[in-house]
Image (tube, rainbow, N blue to C red; front, side):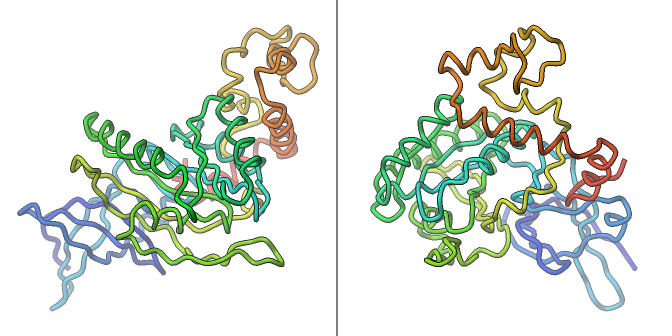
Length: 335
């Protein structure tokens, strides 16, 4: 077996042990190739993810040549849902209805992204079907400090401000030297693919309807795939469509212990350290600065209620078990 020169690429998707990689050639042209990953990644407990910056080796085996993922460059971030690396932004689509807004799952995703350094943008969808619910979602997350949009992918109402935000952000990220890598995510049936196709018609993503019986989507997107795009000013960025998920996907919510949850609820941050008790859980203690802010109407009740539910969920799992399961998550390297 003979190795040739190394090249750099971005993993755009993974299917059945093979990975789609976007490669930059020596002459500056772009090409796509399927690559296999080295077996040592499995031994090291590291799974290549869409969004990874990879070193690609061209190898000659007999009279055949194949491309191999030789190394994964250090990651800025990695997520379990969606399974991606190096995201800068996550556009979390929360439908106003059909299916019913799942704010507990939304708050879990927000906490995970806060912990991972990924900026969450809340998109309250299906404005045409339930404007009141969409506005309620916007109120909850705007008060929590998130950039929030309400829109309808069917009528197009509210999509222009979102598109303007994506363009401005892509240009700013490019100017800062780190191109935007974003994903649209949400529960099955939220309308992610429909919205992305409306915003970027060239993507032509598969879309489907919500089942009237189960109020779930038909899982038209079956894998994460990263697409290269350009802003109106010509700045390159990447956008991913992701499979829909249900709350059951978060039964292995192990990214950090319960004691670190509060710092990942951004509207709690100004209160931390001001409670009467050093080890305040911010759930029921007297003299809790978070609960005081809640009573003053500066924290939305929905957010605090979900904080307690997530906290209780994390407390039920022993720390040794949490660490063991964390190591088994996709993309995690063994210590």
